[in-house]
Length: 85
Image: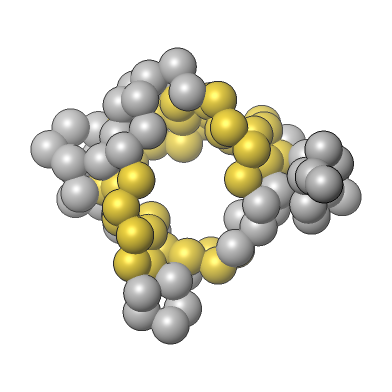
């Protein structure tokens, strides 16, 4: 499945567990990820970044003052990187 993701400034998701995916960032972003145990981490991907992510439950929050967009390509049946060691 291919999904175009858009978050406005201050927009926040509900807790979710996305599948393994490749993300391609169309714009820069300033995001905060909150895990089920309440721990947080900040991420600042730049436009043009492409990366693999494994499934993990989290809340995504746009803590920037501009919207961000990315394309997420969810890989069917892929729960771990097939290139892992």
